[in-house]
Length: 141
Image (cartoon, rainbow, N blue to C red):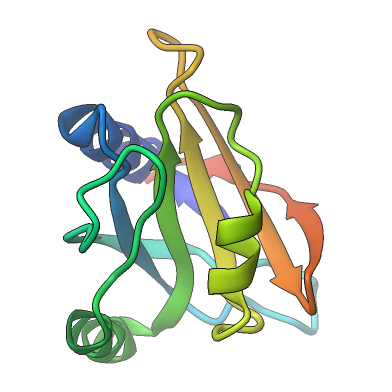
């Protein structure tokens, strides 16, 4: 996914504001250009409420997720679900892998705060329990 510094900063700010609990939300993207291999571009970050208010897991309630999905569709499509790991590296946990099963093809962006003040943001595709890191490429606004 291509993403601007401003949107990356929004993800990091959200993670820091919610710490020590995990934050969560979604990212609207355009379609990119599959013919040329250009990945989707992040258009907007939509914050969500972590239904668990927990430092160990997150969940976006189904009604809120439906509203966010609709908001993303008005701009492009829902391209990523994001959340934070407040105490561990930004790699999907088994809980994340299980949660991702309901959204194949959607990227999973994780903001790792364990290295704060230098958080690490990484993105993954999770399909059938298999985790594959995909690049987040910072681009000009």
